[in-house]
Image (tube, rainbow, N blue to C red; front, side, top):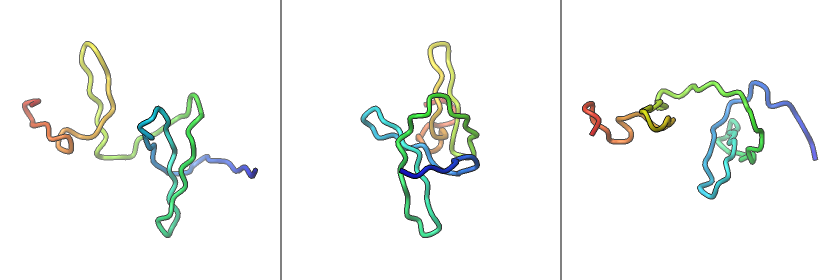
Length: 76
């Protein structure tokens, strides 16, 4: 097994839709490696204009923008 620091690495958090999450890293040729995400308290900076926070008195969610989700300005 080889190891290298991931500090400064850019990638995507990918939902495996089975309870697992991956950190996907693309190379210059658009090939990717999915790393199983096991880090329990990873610091993340979101650099995605389509990421929006939704909050109400019951929950807080990070999802796509209202436009991407088909939600109109009036919330429907």
